Amino acid sequence: MSETSKQNVSVVGLARENVQQLTPYQSARRLGGNGDVWLNANEYALAPHFELTAQTFNRYPECQPKDVVRRYAAYAGVQPEQVLVCRGADESIELLIRAFCEPGKDAILYCPPTYGMYSVSAETFGVEGRTVMAKEDWQLDLPAIEQALDGVKLVYVCSPNNPTGNLINPEDIRSLLETTRGKAVVAVDEAYIEFCPQATVAGWLKDYPHLAILRTLSKAFALAGLRCGFTLANSELIDVLMKVIAPYPLSTPVADIAAQALSEQGLALMRKRVAEVSETREWLRQQLEQCDCVEQVFTSESNYLLARFTASSSVFKTLWDQGIILRDQNKQPGLSGCLRITIGTRQECQRDIDALRPLPGATYTVRETSSASKEPM
Ligand SMILES: *Cc1c(COP(=O)(O)O)cnc(C)c1O
Image (tube, rainbow, N blue to C red; front, side, top):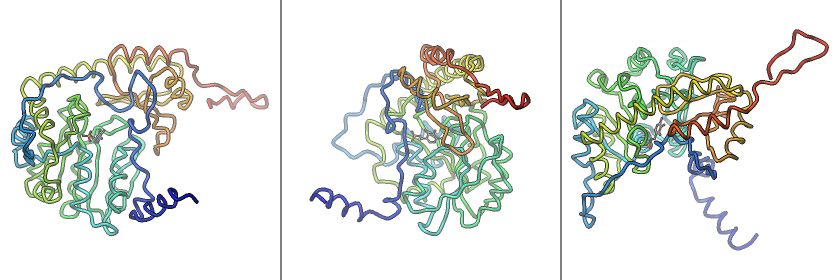
């Protein structure tokens, strides 16, 4: 063994055991690719323009920048003391685990197929990630969840769900909140709520001290690079999270731009973007339904579409080779043959369709012994 590899082995061996075992989140950026049409990370296709107004870079920033908190509260229809701003919704996911789950003892629960960071964050902290598969219609399996709640301190519900695109039935979220009262926190991940604002559960905060809602500026606000997200909850829960958050979670430029994005003008631009993305999504859906290689396009309330393909791996590869990068969901439980397509510009979606159109549909095996067994492969 060479000197350097000896050193590497020893330092890796010093890491916590669950960190040694950990597979990090396979973000779209980490997965890479050489595309010019990026439809794999649910980003907005075009960069909004901002200029910095703050110049006080010699000073530490406010822990909870007042303008940002006040504007987000007004936008979300809650009180400023019900808002925590942090480094993206991903940090909200982490803060909740850090604050509520005892490593090696407590568990989180989530319902695959869903967003990958719940499990990765739990693993990082040495907290059990318990799963209850969603039902065939991708709604919550409430009886199974109730059976599995022993030791669970935190339940993540993603609505609209990434990557399936469906909303979770609000009555089911209410039932879950009733079942978990006094036992566990329910975190409703509303990263895509701007695409279906009527579906928010923010109005329920007054009824549930154990409800936390996750929000972000990464999707409809077109600011994934800013790294800014929010947790909405009653002030008692927010105060618990304040104990574990970093002293300066947001840099001064981030707070500056976030405040601008939440101005009247910023909100109007966001709503215009949402309308345009939703229109493009419906166009793309109709086009996909006419492609031979597409088996099914699922209903979506978000800025992406999930579709099942007859041969998803070769479809993925063919588009990849043409510089069109989609997100492969084939490995997720219940999503065999599925690819997720972010709604890009109309031109990007056209490229997508132009590449998919020529691809063949299901091939049929004709078994000579039995004419009845003509099944699609
Ligand atoms: C994108 C996404 C997040 C993370 O948002 P950031 O604010 O960029 O960290 C959280 N949850 C879901 C469901 C997402 O799709």
